[in-house]
Image (tube, rainbow, N blue to C red; front, side):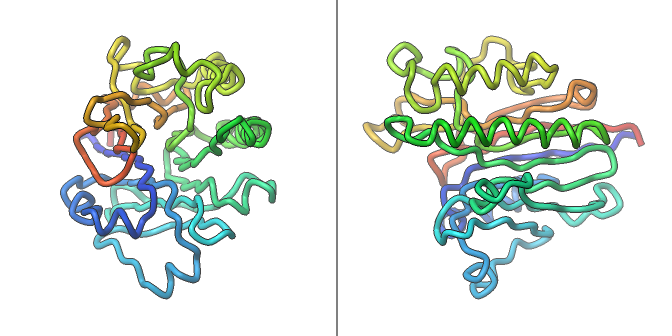
Amino acid sequence: MKNKLRLLSWNVNGVRAAIKKGFLEFLAKSQADTVSIQEIKIAEEARIKENLVFPNYSEYWNSAIRPGYSGVATLVRDRSKEIKILSSSVGIGQKKFDIEGRVQTIEFEKFYLVNTYFPNANHELSRLGYKMDFNNMYLKFIKKLDKKKPVVMCGDFNVAHNEIDLARPKENIGNPGFTNEERSWLDKLTKLGYIDTFRHFNKQKMQYSWWSYRAGARERNVGWRIDYFIVSPRFIKHIKNAFILDSVLGSDHCPVGIDIVFDK
């Protein structure tokens, strides 16, 4: 017998907007076991007041202190016998990052799921230093978890790793999301053995997860692959597929995912 799980990640660019654009219908149809969403853009008080409900899913939220900004949430399908939650936590242990609601960790029996919304370097690279500080603190956090059990990182990393990961690499060298600093950090991550699951299964495939709203970029498929599932090396044996659902609308990003199989 095999225990099969489907994990999805999606920067929804505002959870209220996503719901208006069919997110609940997508969730029901997907039958995903976990759905990690980023850039929820809703404060804790507003979420409670508006009583957002996701049928058949347990919810774990990490909102930013600043209203209408950043934030992540993780939805776990109510199949307690097959995917039991052992613990949940937020942040990486440093206030200047944690007030922005960027990290949510769910501990399952066989792995940690770390839902992450990485900072954007911003125009003129005004937040590049902040992002690199976050990245380095985040890596220390991941390494600590990884000593206990494998880690599955997912979310919007706000960086295209290599030229194959964006439609127009030459024009974007040095731009936010394609700077040497950001790309080198992903180099460092993969040199430590962590595996980009999509690229593991799709060596040469050019497929994207984010498109600018300008100039009809999505219609012309002028995009970037900046949303990832990256896993501990010893966990890759459990992953049977990694994919991008680029036909799913509702945000400037699309969902990405992996299928996991465990022996019961």
